[in-house]
Amino acid sequence: MRELIKKDQLVTVVPQDFKNSNKGRVLDVSLEGFRMELKYKPDGLIKNHICDFYSLTDNGFLYFESYIQNLENNVISIANPVKHRFLQRRKFTRIKFIEDIELVYEDTVYKARTLDISAGGMKLSTRENIDIEKEYKVTIKLSEEQDIKCKYQLIRVEKGDSGIYTISGRFVNLSNIDKMTLVQFCMKKDMENLNK
Image (cartoon, rainbow, N blue to C red):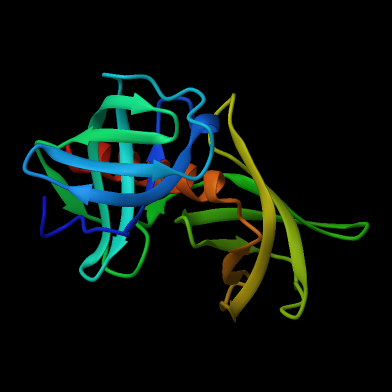
C-alpha cells in the first residue's frame, strides 16, 4: 500500500450511509495501514465497519475497501486493504443507464432519456432541440430512496437521421458526496455487469 498511499495525499471515506462521507489528508503510512486527519467531525464513521475509500493518484483514481481500526478525535487509522483497483485512468467509470429525465431551464422543461452515466456527466437522447449554450437543472433518480440534483451543461449535440438528438454533457456544481455516490453507484453496477 505504501506505493499507492503517500503522506499528505487526499482520501475520501464513504461509509454505508453516504451522508456521512468525509475526506482527509494522510498523516503517515506504515506496514499495517495508514492514518489520516479528517476535514469534518467523524459522525457516522464506526470502528471495524467496512467503508469505501477513493483517492486520485498518479496512476488514476484509486478505489479500495477497508475498515477503521482506531478513531481519536478527527484522526482515524485505516487497515491495509486486501485488494485495490484503479478506476478508469483520469476518467470515471461509465455505465449504461436508461431512465427518463427532465432538463429544466427557467420555466421550460425538456423531456429526454439517459443512455449512459458517470460521475462526470451523462449522455442523453431527445427529440427536442435544446440550446447548447445554457445550463439545465436535472434530477437523476438512482433508486427509490436516492436521487441527485445538479446542473447539466451540454458539451456536444448530434442530430441523427431519425430526428433524434444525442447529447453529451457534464455535471456542474455536483457536491463531493453526490460525486462519490455516483462513483460508487457506477462502479458497483459495472462490477455487477462483469459478474453476470
